[in-house]
Image 1 (cartoon, helix red, strand yellow):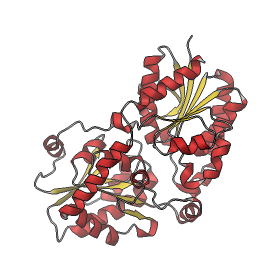
Image 2 (cartoon, rainbow, N blue to C red):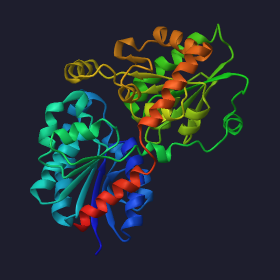
Image 3 (cartoon, rainbow, N blue to C red):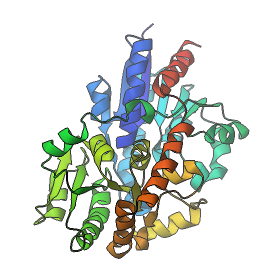
Length: 377
């Protein structure tokens, strides 16, 4: 029997994790037809896309409200696809604003739902977990404490390990990386990763660069490299770095930046966890529009927003959020993590423990088996 799977991933990290899952499903169920929403990685595997993640990129409540008509249109069209193509299974990857609505629509149509990369409702809306149990058949969770949390609420949740364990690896050694990008091996390298949305880059990168600039007079042996997101137009970066010839812009080399930088400054999100898996000292930054931040502070029930700190269950990585994100705050912390060896060693030790908490490689294969078993049942 040729199965049909609809899969919805709304951002870059979702495309990464979904592509690993798609690859494994294709191995375990040859001939499966897969369609939905995603990015270039999914498309390269033959997934038919109705929308690309570049169209779905929003940041904060205000940005969502500005595009509310667009998202209503996306929802209506995806429900129409369910009605027309009748998938055997709907797989949802994070992105709760849209995906939880799609889960409810699928339940009404008798389509089974597998949620992979659970929405972090434990941070902003634990009361919604019981509602989720009414429309989700199985959950494959990637953070250890989530399994018990969701099971206690009546959801069939299984901890499958973290998919980053199978994908996070650098392709170059340090000498190759530095030489390829015109970097000086005698200088300290700061990797700047300002996110995968154009609004993130515009809000975060200028302050990151200003902090590097502040270090310059006292520490001339410092160089910076910026990791460009595939879905952000290069002109966004060029406008921000105009005139700064010493700053390198690099595409498709994020993991090499994470591995071979002496320090990383990273937008809150999946990239913080990816960085942690290389045990490279890092600083987490984030900024949204003031209204979104105010609403978020009312909803978020945890002290840290960085996934690294959430998993560690303590603040092992400094966070500079919203008004705290100023070069005058960043620069002293950057200096400490670059030049105080005991501080660097402590953070590297704490980051290595994160890897141990994330299970064993093979999350994609284990989740694919769940998906195929659901279609066969």
